[in-house]
Structure formats: structure tokens, C-alpha cells
Image 1 (cartoon, helix red, strand yellow):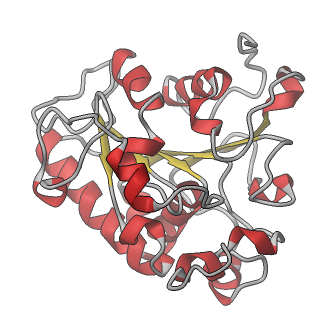
Image 2 (image 1 turned 180 degrees about the vertical axis):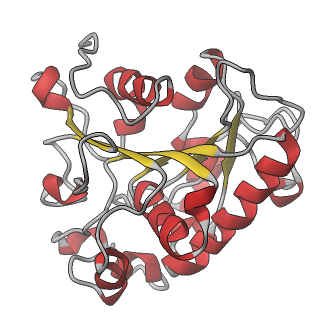
Length: 267
């Protein structure tokens, strides 16, 4: 979820990154660098393909232009999707699109599970997939960057005059969707969870609403400023933060969620 500052057509027009090879679900889409090489086969060191899930009003090319190539360069097969009319559709419908896309990735790569990395709604929506669409058996790790796990109290996150954003109302604190999503707890058996937040989040408010409750061996909640007090990245730009990238790679590169004792290099 993000504040809408540019017309969508202008955002798309500025995205010039081309994917390597498109799969059937994304044949007409522009991929971020390093993503959607459907010939990629996971290595023994990195057996789980990484699927990137963008936020509200976003698309994969814009949301992941910085982080996608970093994950690819670390040795992972990386995939990304566009979904839900720039993630404005009802979240259960978007989760079904993720379900279909993950099945395509597993079929193409031969992997048994994927890791999910999502921004904002993209860090929360997969929890519906895990809990209600059978995704828990197909996902090893969910890494959420400023995810809207318990919604936002900021009414300005629904842009004035913008119609048709069902996902926006779904993400308001106390919405029927979030009540249903969190009714049986924040996690489901199987996957590990890492949440990365910033005290400068102006969209998901309070920023602590991103956190997940769960056992320490399966859930790590990270506030960037606890390790890097001068980190000024806010909600929209958090996927471009070099410190966020370090936390993401830490979570992906180990068994279990990110190491809560990890010390990133502050920039």
C-alpha cells in the first residue's frame, strides 16, 4: 500500500526494464532486472525460487527494480508478478492470482517450495494465500517489507478521488477482511516469517501494526532503526533501502526467519 503521487500511466511509462523470458501468466508484462527467467533452475545452495510481490498501486517493474537484481546476484532464481489491477482488487482475489503464479514457478523450476518477499500489501496478502488457499505447503519463508499485517489507521492512504480500490478498504485497521485474516492468529504452521519495518512509515500506521505474533524460532520482527538509527527510509522507498536488502538476504540465506542478532552495515 502506498500514497498515490503519480498517474499510473506515467509510472508505467518510466519503467524500461525488460525481463529475460516471460512465463505464461506474465507474457505481456515488464519484469524487473533479474526476474522471470523461466529457464532458471535453483541451485543446491538456494533451492527455493524467490517470488516478489508488489504493493498497492504498484507493479513489479517499479517496485523491484533495485532489490530484484540484488537477490538474483546472490544466486537465487527470482520471479515477480503483477496482480489485482495494480493490487487494487479485493485481496482474496489477488491471493488466488499469487496461488496460480506460485504453481507456475514450481512447475517451471522443479522446486518443492518458494520463498516470498513482499512490499506493503505484498507482504500481507500472501498470508491469505498461506492460510486459506493451501499455500503453507508451498512456501518456506515469507519476508514482509513494511507489510500491512494489521492494517493502517491513516485515512489518507485511500487517495482522494480514487475509486475502485477495494484493497484500500481491505487494509484499513479493523476491516472485515483483516478481522477474518487474523482471527486464528498471525501465522500458520509451516512457513517462517520475517517482518521489516521502519519508524518513518507514514502509510502503515502505527508502524508496529506490521509486526506478527509467533514463536521466536519462526517469527522475526525487525525495526530498521534499532540497528541503524539514522536510516531515513519510509514506506514507499523501503524496498530500495540497502539495509532492507541485507535483512532480506539474511532471511533468505538461512534456515528459519532472519537472525534477530544480525547487524547490517548502516548506510
